[in-house]
Length: 248
Image (tube, rainbow, N blue to C red; front, side, top):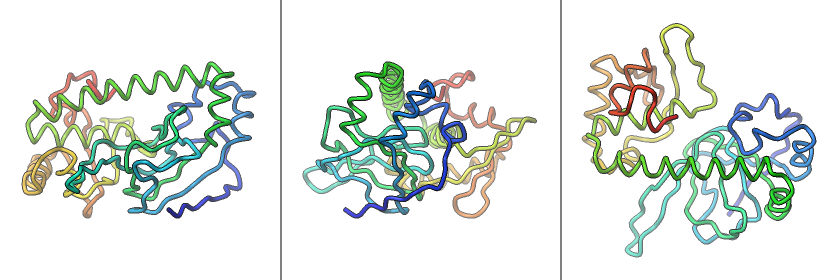
């Protein structure tokens, strides 16, 4: 597996787009200095495999920008997408050397990586990192439970709206309008990938996306760019509570 390690001329943690959500969000300046000693960056092109199931990983990482998919391959060769890695999400598990899923970049992905063993040592000596990673793990568990509800109980329209809202809320590059809750973002998944992830047919995904567009819930600019005139209206289509539900 070919990976590209890149050198950034400068990136202050305070200017990092996911600083307030990442595993290092509670670190003090001295703790950030320790992380700097074991940190480096890797970039992956869209479609490139970041890790295969069973790979031995010598690093853990935070997604700075871009989106990757998590998938598993069944014994008969079928592949099922089981999750997404969005900006600020953490890849890898301290204490576990092997990758649990196939991880594939769906857009260009920039990762802030930490060498595994030094990171594990830092966790033992830096409560802020360990506590934040625990919080993120529990949030991931909550999200997985809510996703089970989405797949099992929501209508096709609610599934599509929920996925769009999840990506919109988590995209660190989003610029929210201060008047009316308008936003725009690039959808990182093809409609085929959305169908696979949501357990729908391609035709159903296309039909529901077209319906949301026709009714003014979303606007499409090209194949992937999505404008949301009113985020609250999109949230109403998800079937979740108006306070944000699983997207908090």
